[in-house]
Structure formats: C-alpha cells, structure tokens
Length: 165
Figure 1 (cartoon, rainbow, N blue to C red):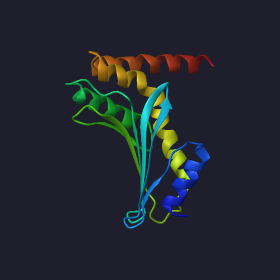
Figure 2: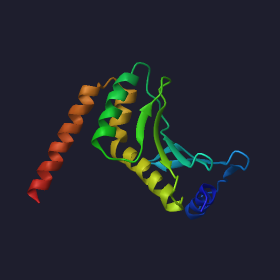
Figure 3: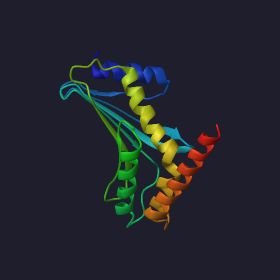
C-alpha cells in the first residue's frame, strides 16, 4: 500500500469531510484539518512523501507562547520528550508557535491507516496529558521551575495512590 492510499483509508475511517491533496509528480500527499482536543481546536497536518518514504504529522494547539517564554518552554519540552515516551516530540518556534511533530520512515515498511492513527493518537495523548502545564508556562508568568514542581507534586500523588492499591 502506498502512503497516499494509507492516508486515503485513514481519512475514510475518520468520517471527516476533508480532501487529500495529491501531487503525483512529486509523490507528495497532504491532509489539513482542525481537530478538537480537550475542547480546543488544534491544527492537524499530515504529509506523505512517496519518494522520501516518509509520513509527517504535525499537531498545533490554538495558542502561542507569549514573548520571552520560548527558552522555558524548550526546557519543559525537553523534560516531556525525555520523560514520557511518545513517538514524536514537542517544540516551540521563535515566533512562539508550539507544535508536536512525528516523522515516520516507511522505507521497507507497508504504510497503513493504523500507522497514521497511531501517530495521531500519540500526538493527542501528549496534549491531553500535558496541556494544562504547557498552556500555563506558555501564556502566564509561571516559571519552568514552578511547572516542574507541579509535575513532581502530581507524580508524588500518583505514587501515593498506587501504594494504597
């Protein structure tokens, strides 16, 4: 199955009213839509490139970091990318745009709609689990140290609950 076919089958399974853009000459296919995550409309972009054997998924929240917060967000994203095992990574651009990016190399593999769904599920999961801390750090005066302390408190509570069971 080609990447284009996998993307088409994925789209059919979602029941979204979107179309895939195909450039036969370049081997590129793309899908762009909005996706509701935690009652927020995220931008979702999925790109496939047959010649490069690559699927790229981008999930972008509807907010940006306020000026001067990029360095602290980089620290938080480094912590999240290192601590939690997702198939992609979080990043922030100089313009404050926050983005989850997953790149899947399909060389020697059979692209499938399930592969794309797994990429999307991972992207959604990281925001479902961490959006409060990301938004607080990105859009308020909360510091990275305060955000990290919040994670440590929640982890201690989680461990305490697990020990009770």
